[in-house]
Length: 103
Image (tube, rainbow, N blue to C red; front, side, top):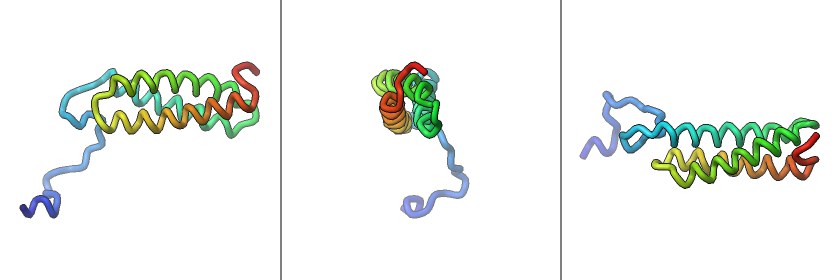
């Protein structure tokens, strides 16, 4: 049981979305797309004319995120989905409140 107290030296840390050992390329792309749309929507709220970008990217990210959450296979994918969904919702809500979808 000493391996439970300390990680072995030959194991390296790997950042991966495929924690189950299988490849999920479509689910990974959807999760990363949700995160990117959410961050773009949230970042757009900090600029005076960014309400158009925030509204559209927020709505797009929210839709992609809901589908991505439905088909996700691993916990890291679900984590990215939740972060992207929240950022998309906040970005879309603030974008709509500050002027909406049209300039």
